[in-house]
Amino acid sequence: MSEMWTAKLRTKWQKELPIEKLLPDDQPAYVASWIYVFGVLTLSALAMIIASGIVLAFEGPAWYHTSDAGKFTNSMHFWSVQLFFVFMVIHLWGKFWMAAWRGNRFRTWATGAVAFISSIATAFTGYLVQTNFDSQWISFEAKDGFNSMGVGAFFNVTNLGQMLLLHVAFLPLILGVLTVVHVLMVRKRGVVPPIDAEPALSNRGPQ
Amino acid sequence: MSISKESKHAFDAAPWSGKTKRYDIVKEGTIALAVVAIFALFLSLLMGSPDETPLTFKGWAVSNPDNFYATTVQELAGTSGTATYGAPYNKGAEGLNVGPLWPQKWMGVTHPIDSVNDFVISPLSTQVMSTEIASAVATWKAAPDTQKQDWATAYDDAITKVEGKISDVPAGAYGPVPALAQGLTDMAKGGALDAALLSQGGFFQTDNTKQILFFGDGSYLDDAGTAANLQGGTWGMMNETGRYPGQAWLWLYSFWYQIPPFNNEESKPIGANADLYIMVLMGVMSAGLIFIPFIPGVKNLPMRIPIHRGIWRQYYDENGIKRRKK
Ligand code: HEM
Image (cartoon, rainbow over all chains, first blue to last red):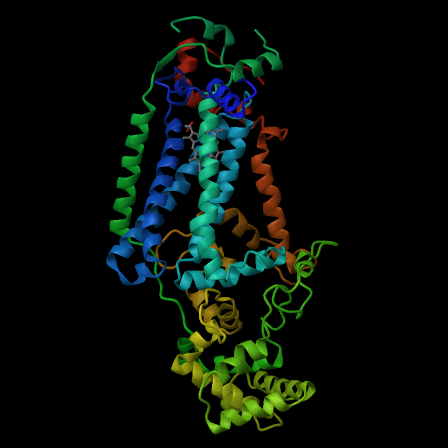
């Protein structure tokens, strides 16, 4: 039985991330600061981006130039992105000053950092598919950097079709997967203890 | 009490066995989502979002016909930005390098653009042409390459000499070039060039490369960028049109373009290859962000600068934990 891949996967999963760890109803007492909210805020802003993005996807990139409903949906998408970045940057700095990579949490940090970089790529392609003057300008200016690296050979910022597909399919997929892995890593490892936390103390008091 | 590095690591990695408290993460998440939704709603209703109409070739040719005309001549003479660009569009230049690395040249011409035919002759040929234009196109097509080059170069130089004022250009051996440039200017004025450049004789089209490159060769796009405060020297792509935040998260990338030697095209090798140097620099810095937990000095900053004392104040106070000297 233990030879079965399915059984092995289930056993590993249950050991590493049981449902009590995934959805705990308590947290260490030191989880008491506003900074902990910014991860969840980032996640919420991402949810708003995806929701408004799906609506935009049904109507196409030119919709918001001509329709009030389109313009509103576009504004929701735009401001959710701005909020997303504000929250994410505060989250990043917070985790830096907490040295939250301690205790085997490097992968949590690294998936976060790669998510940050992927977000920049996703937002950048978003600015390119606005199909307004700003997209004309950005694509003309930005091509030089990518071309200089040779990346322009397969990532062509002046190709609207390519940018649109990357923006609505490939890049959100990457960002989504990274985010899920990131949050699961946090749940698996538990919230990092304070710097200078006292090991002797954690064996005392009500458990 | 001093603790060894290893036992500290083991402690940080082990599941927390100390005091806990009730914490409803699902409720927290729901409230956070509601708060963000309300924020986004307010901002959207209050501020809307940026949407400047795109520029068109028609707008360019109507508002500044001389500049459009002169740009067309540059495309024919092979002196325009596109014609002299290099990879991935053509072999007009070597591309940028960092030391012995020439990635632009190595990747080759993957999106070929022939500024003469793609920008001028083919679009003209999609139209019903006046006899004058038709014969100019025929003359051009029949002429040997050196002859074409001589005509176009002579005219291009003559236009440069009178600083772009087309009506002041003296007569000369320009062959069919003036007729071609006039033909394309008229076509652009009527609005037909926008579509012709995109379709290039096809039906389905999603690639705007040729339009955007031709557009950038003239001064129309550039002037509009300056007017909207979008030039590289003023933090470029970070800005948006109107009173909207742009891609503020690109600040570090834009920053390099503001300082020497990157902002000086004359300075070799870095300024002249700034685009590539800055991309490489950003690549290294991005890797740096990912690997901060391993970078000596940087990884210890959070222990040295006691911001954590504020974050976990309650824990430190309740347990009477003093800062350990580092
Ligand atoms: C897509 C963007 C991101 C989302 C949605 C996200 C979400 C979250 C959430 C929900 C948590 C748990 C709650 C909290 O402690 O705040 C968390 C923890 C964490 N995040 Fe992120 N994050 C993102 C980006 C980043 C970035 C850019 C970094 C740093 C480079 C980062 C580093 C961390 C670390 C180290 C933890 C673990 C903290 C601990 O164990 O106490 N995250 N993240």
